[in-house]
Image 1 (cartoon, rainbow, N blue to C red):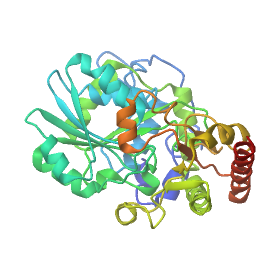
Image 2: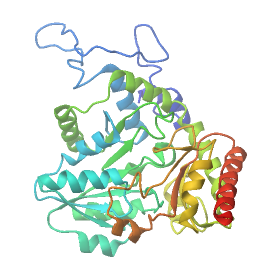
Image 3: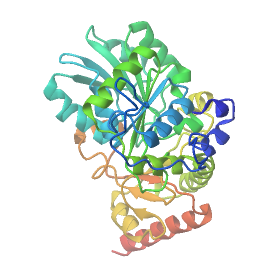
Image 4: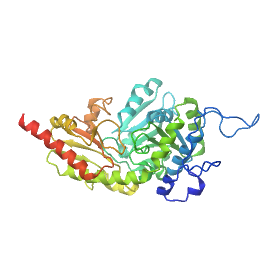
Length: 393
């Protein structure tokens, strides 16, 4: 983040990303530097850019911006959220152990259990808001706790200040996935986290058109370690995608406000619907993590899950929604609905899914920025048509 903008409120910081960084032409939209190689002025001298895998001008603007927004010391842009996670996991060695949020994105579980396990890194999955469970899972070889809050898809909330403080006392790293809230609503490093990760494909990009992951670190030693891994592994974000992500982040504030507003409207509609058993959204006062969420975050995400009373409704609802797209991913301006049990969480064993409540009656809804009344009407129509089909069968 440019020093001239560091004192500004986050809405202004977001809108101004890259606007002062181009010194020659004064371009407000920072250019896409497509070059992979950079000329050295003379032997032993560098412009600060040598090879694009190590550092690229367009990517640097993005990385500096996310570091500033998350109150970190360094930012790293990767080619996807999973590439960012793999880069973080490269901190760990054979025999190391991680404690991980129980209600977990399926791709993270797959990376840990099917890839990292081959290198001797193990994981225990617990409710990270349960200090007794954290204590009983912490071993001499435990190196980090990985927290999703809110979790995906059941929106479980972890008290970040409490758990990050516990991790510091244990001498282990705290890693927080901040994808669903973004730094606009939540800044885990300010609550004690060491590393923040984003699937920037989601809310930060915001337009379902760029695949990216971001890492933010706190502390010089950790930042230097991550820089080494980022360069060595090389799963870095391209200049074009870095520019797209910067462009998306400029409107993050107004998008997150609209996502939050719409999600609250639709969640309250579903909460009263006779065919809906439960709604999992931390913006509802009935949510068990409501008070923690209110204390550590300035707002709520635009995604939630809901459980139908009858699994037979799932297929016709997904077939009849029109404005809402039946599609994976989340966080874009367009509304998307996903069936976690067979899509995003298919790699998690069924017994674990059932234990946490990701069953065949659960739908996940990423609420876009369309008008809330249109989204409610589309959903109400789909449920009514599903009901007519099932009751008339």
